[in-house]
Image 1 (cartoon, rainbow, N blue to C red):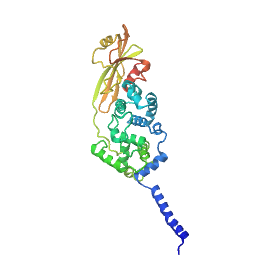
Image 2 (cartoon, one colour):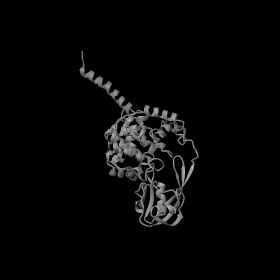
Image 3 (tube, rainbow, N blue to C red):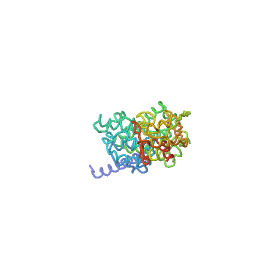
Image 4 (cartoon, helix red, strand yellow):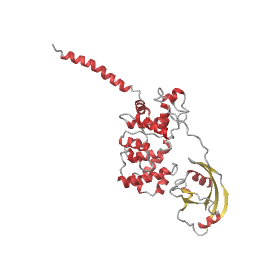
Length: 370
C-alpha cells in the first residue's frame, strides 16, 4: 500500500535537516577567505570614490596613486586628476609636464611618468581599451603583477591574487611566514600562498578585504588584533610576535650626497631647470646646482645682475637608496634687459609654487626663501 502524503512528510523531514546543515556549514566556514569576505561586507571600506565604478581607467588610476600613499592623501588628488584627464585618451594626449603638474605633491614621480607612458601604450597598442588578462596588463608600464590583479578583480571580476605590502604583512603574521618578504624565495612562497587562498567566488570582495584588513587593522605598528577576523587563527597573535612579523628589511647605512643649489629670484619669479626625463626627479622642475658656474655668471646668462647672496637653512631629504643634503643659496637679482629663457629653463611666478611640478624638498626651499 502506498502512502504518498506520508512519503512526502518523511522526505521533508530528511531534506530539511540536510538543507539546514548545508546552510550552517556555509555560514560557519572557518577558512581564511570566508572569514575575510564576511568581515569585509560588514566592516570593510565601501565608500571610496574608486569603489563606485567598474571603469578600468579610474580603478587603474587609484591603484597607481595608492602605491606607497595613504588613502586620505590620494582622494583629493584622484578627484582633481580625473577632472583634468577624464579618460585614458585625454591622459595619453597630454604633455608629460602637464601630468607631472597634476601629480605634484604626491611624490614618487616615477609613478606619474609611468602612468603617462602606460596610457599611451593602451591607446596605441590596445585601441584605448584596458586588457582583461592580468598577464597582459602586468606588462604595461608601471603596473606589475599585483596591481594588474587588483585592476582586473575590481574592473572585470577576474580571479587573481594580489600581493602588495599590506597583503604581505597580513599573510606573514597570520601564517607565521619567516624571512624578509622582499627576498625572492620568501616572495615566491607568499605568491603561492596568496594564490592558494583565493576563494572560488566573490574575489572582488575578498581582494578588497585584504586591502582593508592591512590598511585598517593589521597595521605595521599597533595592530588592532582584538577586532581582526583572523584573531583565532593568526600565528603571530597566538605567539605574541606581531612586532616581529613580517621580518624587517636587513638594515644598511645609506650613503649621503650633498648638493648646493641656487635660489635665483627677482622678488617675483624663480629660475628653475626642467630635469631630464630619467633619473632623480625626472621631468620635474628643480633648482640649478651651483657647481656648474658662479652665481654671478649664471645670473648674467639669464639676463640678470646679481645683487646679493645669502645662505638658507640646510635641508635633508631621504631617497630609497641615499640621503641628500641640500644647501640652498638665495641669490637676489635684477633684470638687466628682460629675463632670458633658454631651453630647459623656466621663470616661475612665486604664486605658482604650490601648483608647479616641483619635488617636495625643492618646494620647501622656495617657500623658505619667500
